[in-house]
Length: 272
Image (cartoon, rainbow, N blue to C red; front, top):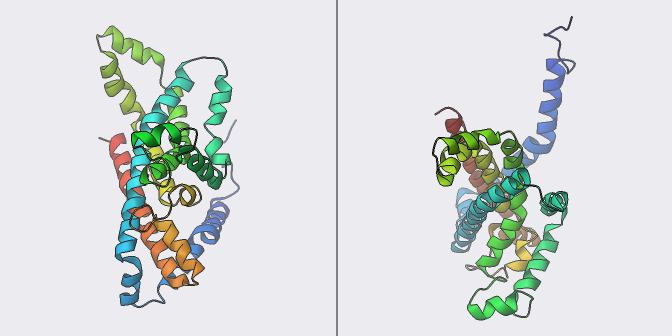
């Protein structure tokens, strides 16, 4: 007879101790060091470092571009996940593997590829630039690369949940007279909403901290195409570690606040 009280892991104390050690070494201690380094600045110096007009412009661009890319990824990611789950077509596994390419590809490579494609002499830029669409060294280029690196987060969170949604539910809704839009909005989306919110949060948080791809495609013009991580790197290059830590804390607070808000929204969706 199987003992239902038997634990797979050896003991709660040992498992908890390992978890706390892991989180302390990789998360808590580095974050504490960041706060301690920023605390070496006086309040006036801290405020002057994190709230300059240039810094505010960088924060606004970082948040706005990350939010726009995350919203686009929700739409595109839902469609990609739907096609991969509900349809069979040639080379399906190949396209499924391509979704994970941004995970394996160095982000700097993505920035170089996008900048070469969308410049005036690029394969796509030669057609888009005359139409007034600047895909390189612009805010549009930043949104494009953030969409590229954030898409897998939405697809991979929605896809397994969608696989568990029975197609018979859609057939039942159609038999009851529901239109395609009513089936999607009232049957499919509510069941996928927690996964969609999680994918959105991951894509948004990923965009907030992205540096490698954006630095090559944005042009890094202050007040125009300069993102907040560039300010951190610029401070580090000037050996101003306290100022870099202070700006990093601002981004950390923004990310943490957004994740808390999204977690509350996700909990509300599960228990209306």
